[in-house]
Length: 216
Image 1: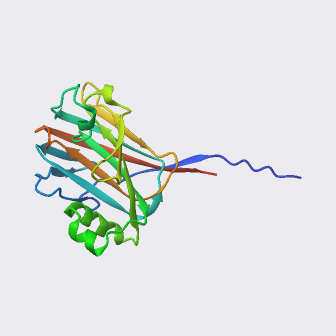
Image 2: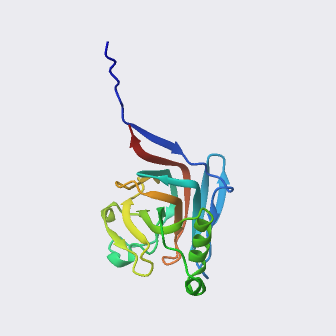
Image 3: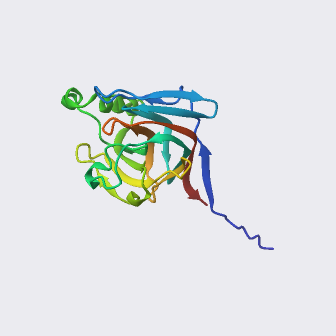
């Protein structure tokens, strides 16, 4: 008698913990940092003409094909809908970035010349004996008309940004960053920015869902 085995494809997904013990704040030079409050089951990022990233380094490298962040926006990003395309990436309600693994490490000279946030990120990634590849980011912006626009950051080409979504009328949002090639990643990057636009708003993050590649 022949046994028939049926293999099913399944998505491996899990929720990331959101707590002060797992996220580290970096600083952008003289720019005022955001205020972050960790609550049961989520976090609130308060922006007041400020901007700073939060970074979470994985305990081990992960292959990721999708990250989805859900939450609510209170307040607004003070930018016009007809803002020039080059400036639409300067401030964002939220930037969700996936830090891919790579061989880039700062040399001694680069460490002296690099901004503080990049030195901090390099040191955090190095603890896992990894380097930085790129940061693939999806942006949450005020206007759905901007969705789909993309660019490589002209100052720091490790950032590859795409405008991914805009909040609903009541402020709720669900932003998804797709990585079809499911690269090996070393961490996540969350950034709310209002310094260039002199904006004041809050981002409540309720859930961060990570999906690994399908398996047989």
